[in-house]
Length: 115
Image 1 (cartoon, one colour):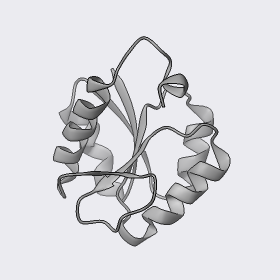
Image 2: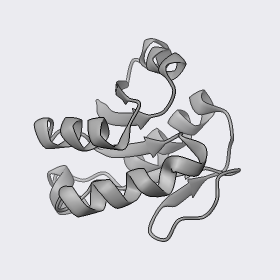
Image 3: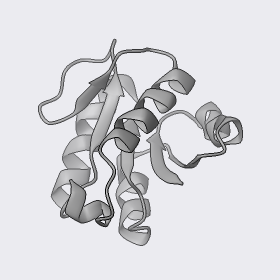
Image 4: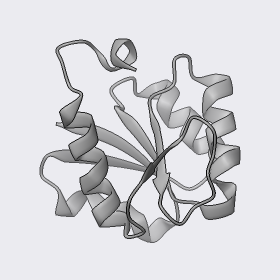
C-alpha cells in the first residue's frame, strides 16, 4: 500500500476510491499539508495539484518536514526545483504514474530512508 498526500481542490479527495493499492490523504492548503505530514510519517509522496500555489506548498513542506517525502506535480504545472513532474495533467492518471514511480524504486527501507 502506497500513501500519497494530494494537495489540491476538494473534488480531488475522491481519488482514493479508484485505487485499491493507494491510500490518498487530502489537503487544500500548505499549512494543512504540513500538519498532515507531521502527523503521518507513513506518507510516501506528495502530489501537488494547486497550480500556481504548488511552489508555496513545496517550500512549506521542505521548511517544516525533514526529510520531506518526494514531491510531484503535473506536466502542465510550472517547473519547481526538486519537484518531479509527471507526464500527465489528469489527476487520476498522475496518481497511477506516481504509484508506478514509487513501486519501481521500492525496497525494504522506511520512506524517510529511501528519499
